[in-house]
Length: 93
Length: 93
Image (cartoon, rainbow over all chains, first blue to last red; front, side):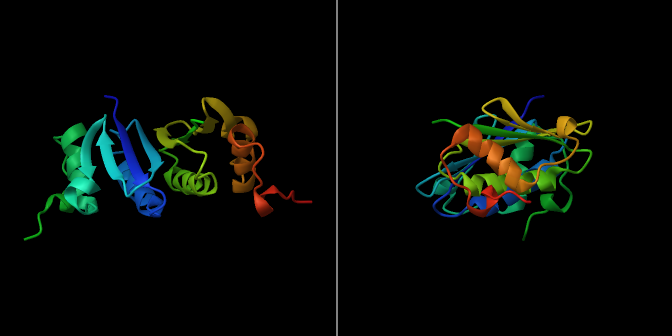
């Protein structure tokens, strides 16, 4: 069980802070599942999260940033599909 | 110029927060030099920082955490030896 997460973020856009925050949220929630999490600065408005090389979020495709709950759901689906996320699993109506 | 930094931290010791803070400091100071920075949770009191696989800090060897200024100096020496660090370069007397 070797899970590598990468957050590729636009540095010019000053997205380090939100990326580092999301990194901490993921490393806390999936402390038993994540082997390593890489922050990778980029350019041109990039914001992409991959799990073991598979994209789970692209700001370009989605047109927005993920809410932290939906990001956790997508990461969970990849690395720990049986794991409950507590109130993060509840859908907003 | 491909520079990979890794921070290997003890998760049980709850050192994620300081590691994530140091990650942000390094990614901000060396925004043009760092290709990627990896946070890797570990156990047993580990706190090690490597630059391109070379250790620049080991809490076990040093007996303490680095001050952020000395961590930046060591990273600088590896990836951007000509770079000035402003007041981080001044030694405390």
